[in-house]
Image 1 (cartoon, rainbow, N blue to C red):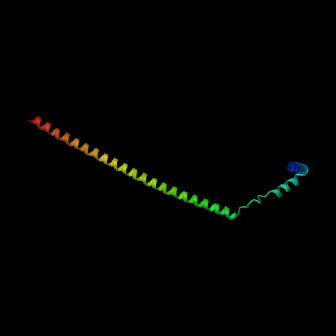
Image 2: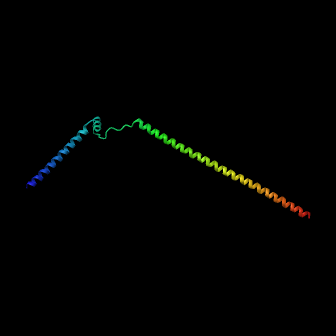
Image 3: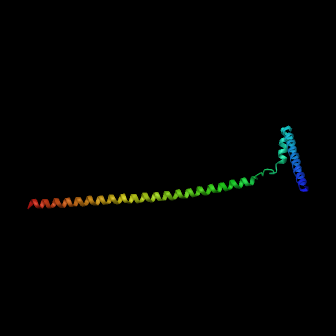
Length: 132
């Protein structure tokens, strides 16, 4: 029976605590609803526990700009080197192509001279054959 009374008392105490907590919550809500906008902002600022926003220093910004400039400069230099290499390779390719064309022209001239010599030789034999 004592246990029953203790259980009943604890249960009634929990109910009272719950009711008081609900009353306090309702009172706080009514208070917040009635306060002015300026006070609301001020209260929210005071309740804000995140702390003030960290301001960035101008040195950080300058360091970022310097880093950005350095990387852009490096990229530009790399692109220039690559372009120079491309130009050199293109020039070499054109030189090789020109040499091949010159060799072809020389070969064609030699073939033409050879054919001309064969034709002259054939003509000489024909003339000797006609004379005999």
